[in-house]
Amino acid sequence: MAKKNNRPTPRVVVNTPAVRPEFNPDYTNVKKDLRRIGLVAGSLFIGLIVLSFFVK
Image (tube, rainbow, N blue to C red; front, side, top):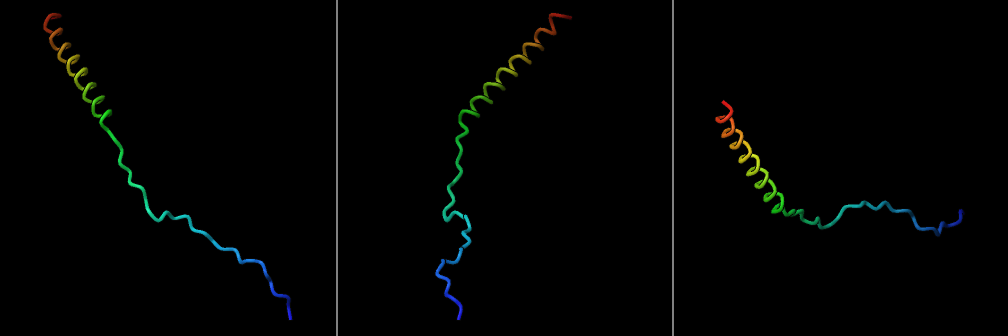
């Protein structure tokens, strides 16, 4: 008879998380920045329109 192998058999471990953490980003600063950019762009655009009346 052959000798008995006492080594443990290799096991394949699948890396799947049991509980997935929720992705909940905070966009409050982004909203503030976009609002500020919109206000600056709008005011500059209105300023250009007003200045165009003085150029003519």
